[in-house]
Image 1 (cartoon, rainbow, N blue to C red):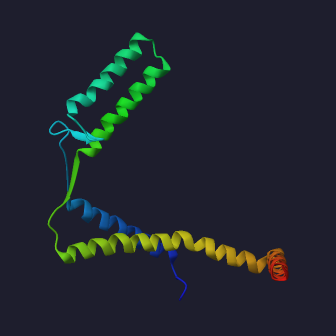
Image 2: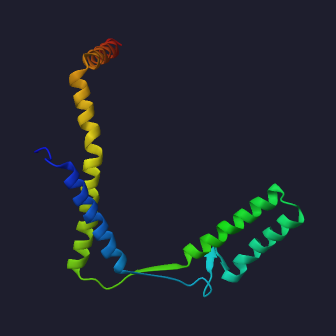
Image 3: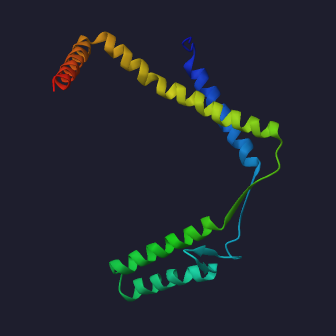
Length: 160
């Protein structure tokens, strides 16, 4: 495989593809939330979304009454987490009607761009390692010693 002549250009092209694909994808997705509509199920228990606010209210009152005890802070934090979880669970994400060509274009742009960006970002590590191996004779000596130790271990295993 030929070495890339201009890695910056490849990186920018991959980044442009990735951003373009994500933009087109975001234009084809409908997101809605029915937080005050239906509620959600948690462990088989149906909870209306109004009931989600009750633990939060209890936690805030408890914090003011007990002057900020650790238990009241933990309870309030857990209730805030429960409210956020309720919003996420009741969020409805739907893909609008797209043609096969549009879907293939979106996937090629997103994953092709991500692949180009990843190749450029991670290529330096491989090249640096191979360059260091060539430049530093100690690494070669260490590799030889490791191979000798492995061969010795194999010989010992065979003798048993």
